[in-house]
Amino acid sequence: MLAHLPGLTESRGMATQHPHDHDHGTDQHGGHERGAHQHGDAGQMAAWQETDPAEWFTESFWDDRYRERPIWSGNANQRLVEAAAELTPGRALDVGCGEGGDAIWLASRGWQVTASDVSPVALDRARQAAGSAGVGEAITWEQADGRSDWTPPAGAYDLVTASFLQFPRPELGAFHRKLAGAVAPGGTLLITAHHADSHAGEGTPFTADLFATAQEMADGLALDDTWEVSATDPTREAVFPPGPEGQLMSVRDAVLRAVRRG
Image 1 (cartoon, rainbow, N blue to C red):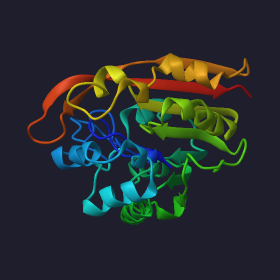
Image 2 (tube, helix red, strand yellow):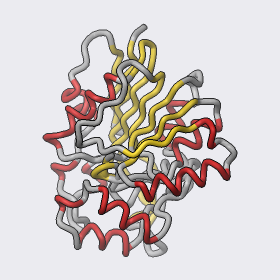
Image 3 (cartoon, rainbow, N blue to C red):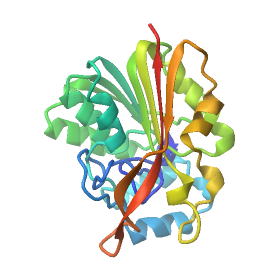
């Protein structure tokens, strides 16, 4: 579905579902529980630098990345863990699920999860991980591209989450409105993204226009007064650049949390 950026997150992709940076918090990719993230390595970053940016959001790009080896730590994203810890388990939609770290974490806590990604290779790996974790029956896996005409069912989920799925700014608001439309009354929308302060500029292939602050995401989504919206840009500790030569540093996320009033 989307595109996760490599480097300081954990779990997913960018164009369809990733330039995955899922694995959250100070995760170590793909998983949930944090420590110091090590999303991707120099080889993964080179794949971004050597590829036409128009390809970053495609199924083939992410399938190639996942075929090389596991990308994420398997841990859940820190921002999801923080937000979902206080929620009553129900129906969840994890968009851009990558190798399944967030979906598995949610299922292990009693959620019934629909998890989607643009990459069939990532979904196969996620399905296997969920089976090994004993939560395979609680998760439905779907291959989908968030940039297409894919739309989740309206009002169907108590939690809709997308972690580090970085779309080009002209497409961002429309994509987020799809996600908001899937939230049930009383449910929560949680969007976690990379902040340009930490992920764009010299030393990366990414420019600032690929990123939005939490407030910019909220403005683009333009929710009405039936929603309670929180937009924050918190920092966390992560390893950058990814890999053994990286340095532990503070990085900034953009976190939009919106609760649909019942």
